[in-house]
Image (cartoon, rainbow, N blue to C red; front, top):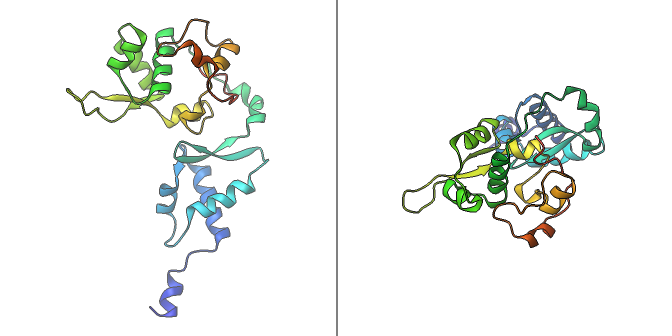
Length: 210
């Protein structure tokens, strides 16, 4: 390959790549993965490196570049969330059945309907699962390689994004949820009493409020 051919395919300067990543994240209605961004950028670009520069540039600003599952997005700085309170829409409270089902999926994923019912001790209505699917907080996972190949459920990036979590591993412990008044003192289905002391403090104490 000649120098002329090389120059034709040279990647843009890193500052320009950073601007590209910034523009894509700003314009996207949903978080973008590195693969999504790199597929839109010119040949030879390094979306991961450009993103690293962009994250540093936005540290301490009113908006930050945050990870949402395997993707990235602009989000309001956590300490400034109170300024957005006037934009809050009417909230619908989930039933206890929906809260328990969501908690089981979040803490036990991937989990089948039969496993959810076994943990809860009661049948799970189709309406409860449909409500969580419509909210976009759970989705269908891979089918189990067992007789009947039952489908599993897992939480979504929308769920993680809504509650400010990077991954399901960042879920608060039951102790934090109860201290915040979001759960009563009855053991949650599938959780032993000693599990109350497990889990890192993440500050996401609004977990099952809505």
